[in-house]
Amino acid sequence: MRKYFEFDKLGTNYRRETIAGITTFLAMAYILAVNPYMLSGADLPPELKANYPEFGAVFTATALAAAIGTLVMAFVGRLPIAQAPGMGLNAFFTYTVVLTMGIPWQQALAGVFLSCSIFLLLSLTGIREAIVNSIPQGLKNAVSAGIGLFIAFIGLKNAGIIVDNPATFVSLGHLTIQEGMKPEEILAVKNALLAVFGLILTAVLMSRKVNAAIFIGMLVTAIVGMFFGLVNLPEKIVSMPPSLAPTFGAAFQYLGDFSALFSMKMLIVVFTFLFVDFFDATGTLLGVASQAGLLKDGKLPRAGSALASDAIAGMAGAVLGTSTTTSYIESAAGVAAGGRTGFASVVTGALFLLALFFSPVLAVVTPAVTAPALIIVGVLMASHMANIAWSEMEEAFPAFLTILMMPLTYSIASGIAAGFIVYPITKLLKGKGREVHPVMYVLFFVFLAYFIWLRE
Image 1 (tube, rainbow, N blue to C red):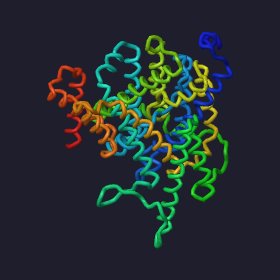
Image 2: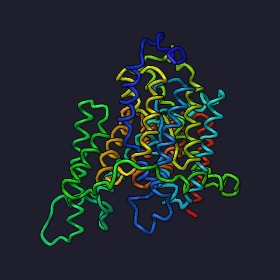
Image 3: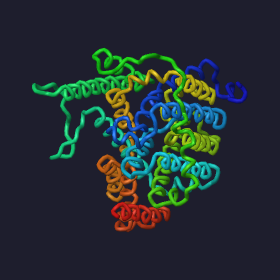
Image 4: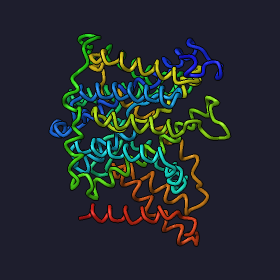
C-alpha cells in the first residue's frame, strides 16, 4: 500500500493520511443530509413531493455514490480528493429539470448518466483540452458564481428569511414575533431565527478556518433547535441503511427511449450537467492538487485518470439514484491536514460507507438546519465573481446576465443560456468576433433554439 501510493516519494505516512481522510469527510459530511433533502423535494409543497425520489433511498444513494466515487479516485487517480453528489448540480436537478421543466426524475437521472458517459469519453481523449479552451474564462466564472447565488437564494427561501410578496415578488420574512400572529406564523419566525443563528455560527467558524465548519454548524444548529423544540429528536442513532430499491436503476427505463433522451429539452439538460461538472471537476482537481504541491510544470499527473474517475463516479451515482457525483473542493481541508496521496481518499470513502448506518440521525434535518449550509456554499461559489473582467463590458455584461438570471428565473440552464447567447453578440459588435471560438457560435444557436422552444 505504501509503495502503490508512493508514501516515501511524497513524504507522508499512514497517520497523516488517515487524519487527512477524516478531516475531508467531516468537511463534506453535510452532503449526506443536504443532498437527500434537496433531491427528495423535502422543501416543496406536499402535492409536488410525489414527483421526487424517496428521501431514504436518496440518502443511501448519496452515501454509496460518495464512497464509490472517492474510492475510485483513490485507486485510479491516486489523489487525496473525495467525491460526492455536487452542490449546484443537485439544485439544477431538483428545481430546474424536475420542478420547472417537468421532466420525470427517472429521466433526469438518465440525463445525468448520459452526461457523465460523454464526460468519460472526453476525459480519455484530447478533446477535453479543446473544450476547456473554447469556453471563455469569464463565463466559466459566471456560471459558478450564478449557481452560488441560486443556492443561497434557495437556502434563504427555505429558512423563511426571504418570502414571497405579491407587490415586490420577494421580501424579508418576519424575524420578530408580533401580536396577533397565528401559531404557524410564530413557528416560522422561530425557525427563521434558528437559521440566522446557524448562518452566523457557520460564518464565524469558516472565518476561523475550522475545517469542518459547515458540518459543525449544522450539528450545533440542530442541537439548539432540539433545545427550543424546533427540531425532533431522532428515535435512534444506528440502523440498517434505507432501501435503495426506489431509485436503483431507475435511469435505465429512459436510456433506451431515444425520443425522450434526445429531445431539445433533454439535450439542454444533458449539456448543462456536462458543462457544470466538466469545469467544476477540472477546477477542483487543479486547485486541490496545486495546494498539495502535486502539479508538475503546472500540469496534473494522471489528469486523464483523475477526470475519468470523476466521470465514473457520476455514472455510478446516476445508477444508484442521485444527481451528478463530482470532486469536492472540501478535499482541500484534508490536504491542509497533510493529505498527499489516494490513501486519504480510501479513509474518506470508508467513512462514507460507515455513515450508511446512521440514517436515523437525519431526522434532525429541517429547512432551518440545512439553510446555513446552502447559503455558505453559495458564498464560496460566488467568490468566482472576483475573477471576471468587469472593466471590459463585452466580458462583463454576458457574465452579469448569467449570474443574475439564475436566481431570478429559478433556473441554472436559463442563466447559462442567456450568457452564451449574449457573449458572441457583444464580441461581434465590439469587432472581436474572431476571438470567439467556433464552439461558442454553435452554442449560440443551440441556446437560442432553447429559448424559442420554451416560449412555445
